[in-house]
Figure 1 (cartoon, rainbow, N blue to C red):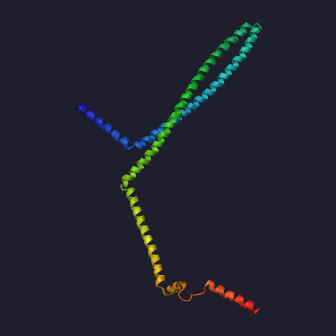
Figure 2: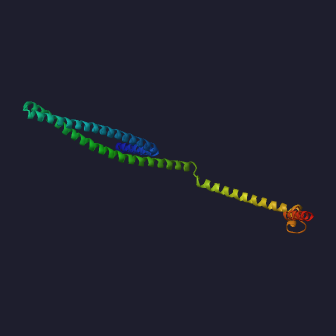
Figure 3: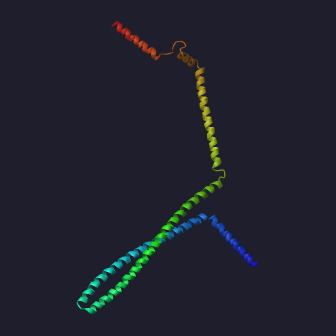
Length: 231
């Protein structure tokens, strides 16, 4: 019985942990992304340090090679002059420097391989981090949309439909007002005696009302002809 009770408690704890993880998944994801970014920054610093050490080791190796070349030249000169003991000392030093040179070459190869692995890991990690950041942005957008739907269950489709219906009623009313105004204006012209008289005159029913362009031109021509005859 006690064993079952312990198992139950462990199960409840596990379920509670899962519920907390699900409820705060975005917060957990943000922190995990921050941790990943910090780890990548640390890897970049390690790669930069390894590169600096490689440069230092390369310069050290070049110095050893030059030193060996100088000592070999002088040791050969000592041998040519018969200074055997001095030449032996030179040979011993050259041997030690050559050992240092070989160790430096091993270190350079090690640094080069390590730097290559670090850079490859960093590039792959940066790609995965960018994917995580994009996924986080999508998750935030989806959560905000879900929260909006939960807050306003009828949003946005019902609200959009209501707005469209309102716009339709507004347009119908405006169209009706335009038609009504046009009909009213036409009625005013029709019912107005002066308006009716003007339309009848324009149709050639009776004498014209007011001066017309043709009448003015005819009058001016008559004046010109009269003036010409008198002169």
